[in-house]
Length: 377
Image (cartoon, rainbow, N blue to C red; front, side):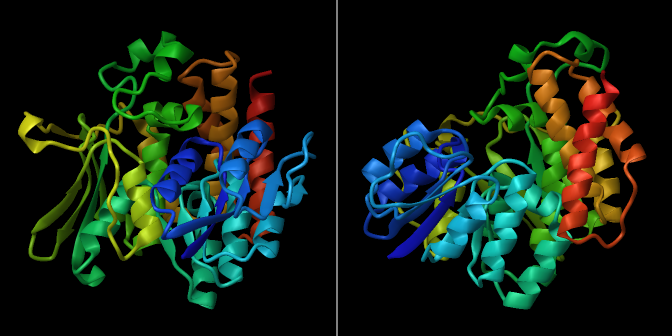
């Protein structure tokens, strides 16, 4: 029985993780959960899973959690890690706040199933050092990185010559730059293939999300940026590919269901039965389209490569500026293209730190958010 501590339990990835756990009660046990501000949903989860003994929330709960040790406030997730007996951390939180729990679990010597992109985008250097120090591992939950991870099984990583990450292109993949000037929040939130959280859906449309994934892939698979490519793939059926030294390419295909990579991360190295409503049927898949990525149309992807190469605190600035800009766009305060402007201006304005510690990254994250807020006042 593998004991799971789940951070971000009430979000999109968190709820699908709970579903995977419930499909395999003989293999997984939920022993701890955090939920940000969604206390009501967390109560529902704890009621269904009496094995939960540790709970985390952003603020003091209004209703008691029976038989649970409750932590709330800024460091509630780290406190859950410190006080919970678990075998695997599932970090399904969104944003920079996910970095500290990732580091805390690795420091404790416990592996992490990682959905929190920002842990590697903002703090990849620190995460890599902690893994080397403690001998711990990350299991990717992102569909693209899970695909690469699966393609590498049975092969030697050193024989992989290129990682090929697929991108749907997001909500506005068929629009040109001029047409993007007047798009609405509602249009941006209509992703053609995936049902995801609000921020990641916007990040998919700007291609910031794919830029994050390039940086993640660099740290997860120790691959130089020059050997990580992105291609547009309309159908989101091929989740990513690996090209090997002999030019053979292995791909992982599947339906747009995040439970598959979640389950693979939880059960690795085993594969389990997954109850899926619409499994991929290749006889009904008529066409698969692949197109070259145009970085003049999606400039944020080029920015991500540049940031990844320079490392330092730039990932924290990139993420912080994006997170703030996306929030302002969703609130109707800025336009869609203003998200790109926000990121570019923040990168120019925030001082570069080549070898940051956690406090430096936290400061850079805060400064970039404040910069974006003030820039549009």
